[in-house]
Length: 355
Image (cartoon, rainbow, N blue to C red):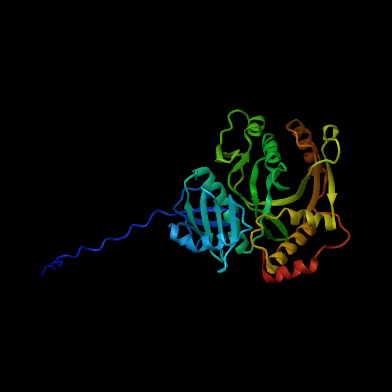
């Protein structure tokens, strides 16, 4: 007997799911239908973070909450929502919703978004919200690899972190991560997790340090900065032990006659140097502040923290690299100090199982 379909009813079609790609960056596994600049990874049953497109109405409540906050600047908006998630918007470019637990990111492109700008902000500022929600406090810096160990450069926006990373790259020392630095402690050592194989530079800096063949795409229409992809040998894709942290500083007085120099940072100065170098200050509460202080205390106990002072001139970068490499070769891996700083906080963090 042959089954005859009823009139007026069409057979149900199977929904074809879009192909999902797995990626790995900052020690996290990602799953998305997007083509991202992260390194691809093998498929996983449960990724740390899923990245999905959402229609405009999914952002309506978050938009109303953000509009009620008059402290938010016009071009960039970041707000911790009443439900615990985070809403981010770059006007005319894109908007994002990060779930309270950090495991889901919803996105929507706006009229002026480009593929390059979308990728930069998604895998940078937006994904850092997931890192924080998952218990990882990122640093705002650039990490380079020298003789199998990582050095991290911390500093304010425009301090020259990426430029110094590019200067070392021109000498053959690969970049590990640029902008977001995620750390994990394993077997008594801190490991710097690999970031996206790219670096952000102004065109004049890219041409000077990486040559005329260095090609990049503009970040967005409001800055001339370029995003330059890094090839094999220029960027490492595995975790690397952290050797030292360098806090970048400008010289006091006449910078024209100043040469690069390195000074040790101990105790309170080292602690504050790390605290000022933390990434993503969107949502600060008592628990997160405690985690930040515990991280800084453990870092300054375990890792040498130095201040690198030099004038911000391209012509000075050769001297800066020479000074940095000489300091790297002649200094022990662990800092010299009179007593552990914040050891009680570090012990409490160990008991919580935090990285």
